[in-house]
Amino acid sequence: MAQNTEEIIKVENLTKVFGSGKKAVKAVNNINFSIKKGEIVSLVGQSGSGKTTVTRLILRLLKETEGKIIFEGKDVTDIKGKEKKEYWKKVQAIFQDPYASFNIFSPVKKVLLDTFKLFNSSYSKKEKEKLICETLESVNLRPEEVVDKYPFELSGGQRQRIMIARAHLIRPQLLLADEPTSMIDANLRSGILELLLSLRDTDDCTIMFVTHDLGLAYYVSDRIFIMHEGEIVEEGSADKIITAPEHPYTIQLIKDVPKLSEEWLTS
Ligand SMILES: Nc1ncnc2c1ncn2[C@@H]1O[C@H](COP(=O)(O)OP(=O)(O)OP(=O)(O)O)[C@@H](O)[C@H]1O
Image 1 (cartoon, protein in one colour):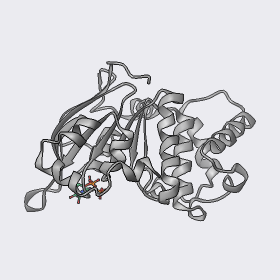
Image 2 (cartoon, rainbow, N blue to C red; image 1 turned 120 degrees about the vertical axis):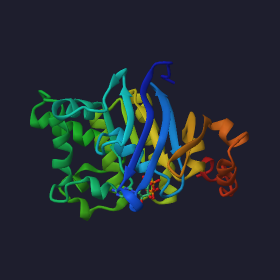
Image 3 (cartoon, helix red, strand yellow; image 1 turned 60 degrees about the vertical axis):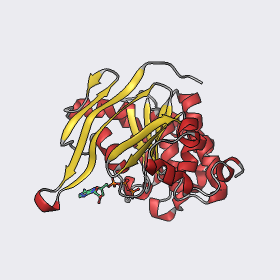
């Protein structure tokens, strides 16, 4: 395990309010956490608890109402333009619905070729295509079957695998994986999870999973953050959260997972 004590990201007093007046929604309410290089953490909470908003704030796709995001010791809260592009080489996301993340007018090959634009790489087109094929094979897709297809011609699971292939090509330092297996059949899910987890070993990647599924979080994570109504109500090692939960909401979540560990460990 490539884990050390150096912090890759730190979130300080982060708050996001959507709308104003009577219609204001405090989606994220003064949260604080940090993640160490090489760690796998999960942000767990039910629908509407604010998880995706945290992901979008970290990616700087959304402007915070208050607070700071420090990445590798540098305050990235106000980065713009070129600096943001640099940041996106290091911080990437796989979203719940990868369909929404693709340009629907681009075939898979173009989606993947475009990732090289992030790097001003000196690869020839042939070299890029070879890398794309190898990467697609590494996520168990047959390049010849998918490269010329448009996103709408693929299954949800194939689209999620392509997002993982994209992450492999970009090799981010921090990967935010928002419900990355939601569109994948239960019997294929553990394979995709293994692929994602292998990014830590092969690409030296730190991963934050975002999920409503505490069973999955327990299976994949070093640490778990429990999110409820915009706040992180409890955090700790995966074992601690499951065996000695303190917050009533965490205790309820555990009760709601009927066969915790069995479901993920045996699939
Ligand atoms: N652009 C927006 N404008 C207004 N309200 C929003 C917006 N985005 C999110 N919200 C609200 O913020 C709250 C948190 O939403 P968020 O999508 O972060 O939750 P989530 O935990 O990711 O949920 P899910 O698991 O269903 O994706 C919800 O009440 C949601 O309705």
